Length: 101
Image (cartoon, rainbow, N blue to C red; front, side, top):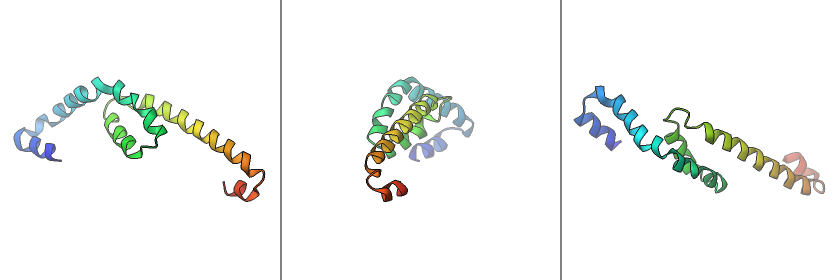
């Protein structure tokens, strides 16, 4: 918010779009591999706030989310299968758990 106020105060409004695009390119695109590299660990550690910030950052660049989307789908599938396997083990002896799950 403070950065935005400074830009409005010191720069002409016509420079906003170009400035934002250049900042995105320098600060996000050039470091995208490093940023994406932390994604799997954040998923495994259930770091929702960090994942939200990552999403907001990476979504600013073209096709920035594509590799993350693929990894996320794989993660959801893996976690879902594990959950079903775990429930299957106990649900045989506990029908109520089977129905509620």
